[in-house]
Amino acid sequence: MLRATTPAPPGPRDRRRRRLARRWLSAGLAAAAVGAAVSALAPPRPPQQDVLVAARDLPAGAVLAPSDVQRVERARASVPDGALRSAGGAVLAGAVRRGEVLTDARTAGAGLLTGQPPGTLATTVAVDDPLVLGSLAPGARVDVLARTDDPVTGLPSGAERVAGGVVVLAVPTAPGGGGPLGPDPAGAAGGVLVAVDARTAAELAAAGGRTVVALRAP
Image (tube, helix red, strand yellow):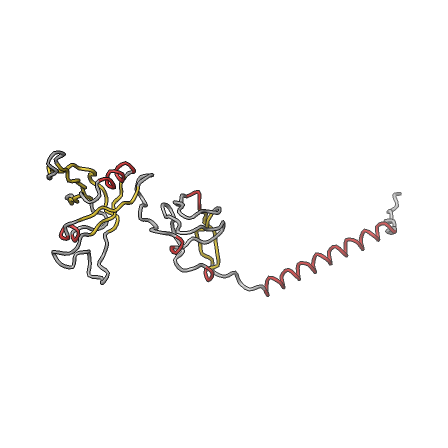
């Protein structure tokens, strides 16, 4: 006949293991309780907003490229007014530090050359006719002609085209807010800002004082 075996009473080692297990369990429960209390007392995360910051230190005059900026989250209440939503082509008016939020106050002529081919320059062309000046607007395309003189007599002999189909970037306005320059038909000459390549910009500079702007049909 088989006899039922009686389990041996726990020894000192078993008792130490059980005490140690109970201590770890108590410590874990206490840590969980503290974590829950801290989470309950912590204030909710404030509303966030995506902003563009400088990816590295950038000098004044830098033309921003996608690699120069990065998008990060900042507390909405701390985001400055005028934060840029996009920065491609914007020109920095002053140096910025890495991590600084980019704003319109940090850029000069932000977006003026956006979309233009790399290397495009903005240069001013004089417009003598106030009626022509009054008909121009940003986005218009114009031809720029330079008057030529007879090398012997010095008399006007014609004109040659210096630039064709260039885009008008900006048109000056009268200081009093009266619209384009030329408050009357005999108003003073003005100028417009056009987008050209480097070679054309040099030719326009050489033709200064002899240029004529002709508006192209859309």
